[in-house]
Length: 243
Image (spheres, helix red, strand yellow):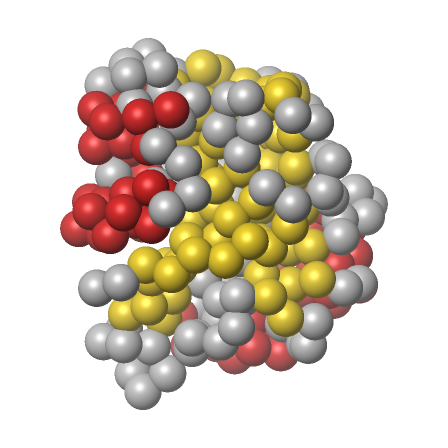
């Protein structure tokens, strides 16, 4: 197992591990994102089994012991399975998540007490990097779900949104909505509900410059248009389900 690393924006690195055995023949990628600053932040920990590979990849950019913040979209093995492994190697690191996630799960699961974030709260990482937390309950799934945007670069760390198969380039400007719909038709992993489309369209209002996907390539281009199209797709899916 090998984790590849690529800089998708200034000081933001994609750590990507391809697993051919998941959804063959295309396979599946598991991505973490490292945001450098005076207080470096890792978005997604990866599952425990990938920890040695992901740690080795991070070490090519910075000393993992200097990690300060650990964040993720929701409580799930591939999002936070290696959380406590990172806490062990980084003595100053602290998990940060929304209040629901902390109250329901992380106050117990994390080896050190997490920082509870309110919707819209900012963590200033220094070196002009600012991460803003966004509550997105049940989007794409999990009532504790939330996303983050790095405001200086306009990078939306969008977790499982736009999940797609395959092992493409680290950064693309081609269509990501069609492949995301194909993956949703296969996995049916999203929590369809009346406000899902509206929640995704509110993310478009942020006017992000790029989208950092957990499963698939990162995207640079008209990210707002992609978010609007994805929100409209989920509206159609919910209406069809209700009918």
